[in-house]
Length: 279
Ligand code: MG
Image 1: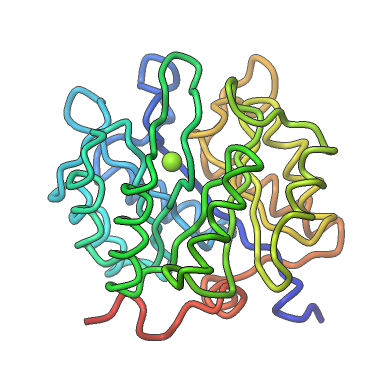
Image 2: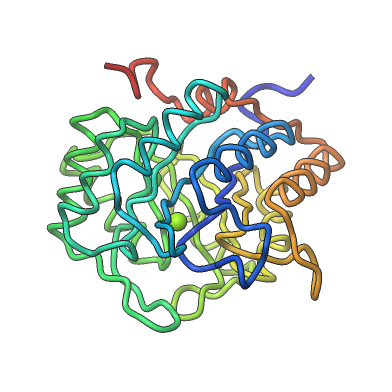
């Protein structure tokens, strides 16, 4: 029997900011679609849901009511750990990005630096990062440090030195996005070596890197994020579903001897405090 600490946590990021229905009919956009999709992913072994909101035109939205609708319906119907994206494509103002934390998810993403995306800059200045970290600390929301480059690991460690975030830290290594760190195994190994002992990490391989890096993360005792936010294909020329991506990585992990963490297991592995998300 696998020890809980050795199990694989699967995060699913079903929506993101970019893919639209014209790109793939499998992208969930409305709160209802996101909820139904999340439940299917939970059945296949996902334990964390990374949430982005979209408006009726499918554009990224910072509307608190949309986040609320998704979070409230899933709290009733699932045991998933809900992780709100504080990403900036839906509005780069500090208030816009902090406000959505009011829905009190157990986790939220925190990008600890700036980077170029393929067609725009993703700007996260020091005062914004600090503001988000402070609010997450106040609301007892566990940050997932989104790492697009090596420097961002060290920015996260500086937040820890200033007691704005606390151990054990959790990182998401986002690799293979044009403009950010490339998706080589060497870079992944190096990023892992930069993480402080006792921290946990997951990998988000973008595009074709999703499966390749996911498999390596399973072998390296990391965790894996899948989902159409990062890659809309199952294999070249064949569109994926979110639940299909979860099913595939869960099956590969079991083949390699790692059982899949339930949401309860994942809470223990990530040391989510029992009071997180409450009150
Ligand atoms: Mg995201």
